[in-house]
Length: 104
Image (cartoon, rainbow, N blue to C red; front, side, top):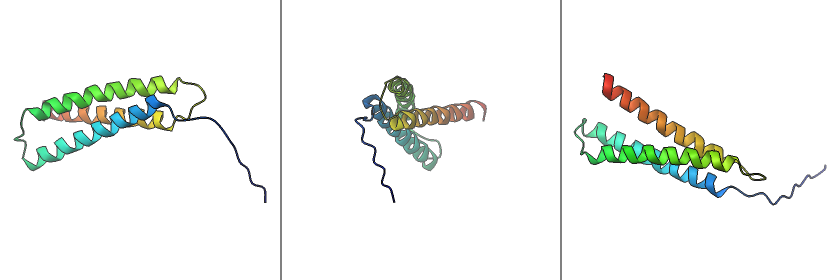
């Protein structure tokens, strides 16, 4: 039985890790305000709108960081892809919430 080892000096991109962190923060905040809004039957403070706006800004920043980290050479791109996916998911959920609020 042959053992194959591959040694490399690749590391994860810091921008990709930051994009993932921003995506996790945004998704967590968005889930929290959505659940709390459901529990309060829609009677929520205005600060929840500010939180949703900040999650949108974080999501855009996370997408930019994820794309920039993807352009780095000789790195691992797991966190870059994960950050992009999480931040696009946040924007999609925000879009659905805004669409439902405008036309429901």
